[in-house]
Image (tube, rainbow, N blue to C red; front, side, top):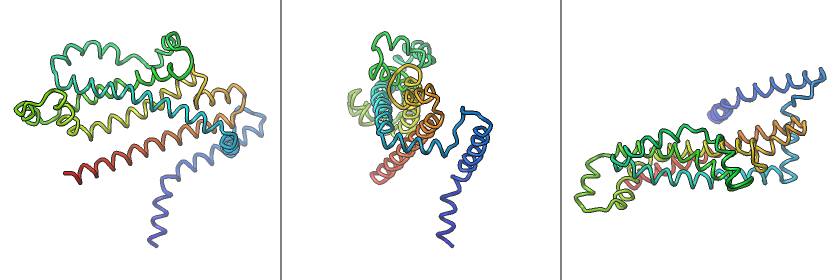
Length: 257
């Protein structure tokens, strides 16, 4: 009884997606019977997915997109972290940089595609630059806000102890903002993956986004749907991994405390 209830709880989140897939399967098959070739049922997409996995194209495109998103996130979020700490610790610097941040932050990252293509051409560097730009701003804003909420007495004690700005940042501020930092990092991971796929759809002839566009242009709706579903699965897996990492870090910090 207990095991059955546990299985039921585990399967419950999948009920609605499976119902939707079943309804779409029926709809796509009826459309095909009426002569439409614009839609493919999920069963056909599954066959196309297996084919892409067996010929290696699935893994090659996935590795390119994830690698580019990770490198762009590392560059953008890393710079955003450092600058966010600096602006959070220095109200004067925050006031000086306020206008520049508010002017450049709302610029859509995909609007930089023409400029990035002129500077870097097609390929890895162009996509890296756009992903880094997109992930820089949320990390900067969230880290700056987190630093401002650090207990002021901790900073006063660090000044009394004669700690340098660098020591204050890495010994006092950074450990204090770790929980909020993971929220910013999870947001950055999602942004990095979305922007990477978008750039590949729009301009870069590599990765999962480009593979999906090629399937669409080749009038292969089954393969296009397979890529769309796989991108969703990859995004879910990355987010789940970040949640596990956040939980592990919280347990470690609790044990250390």
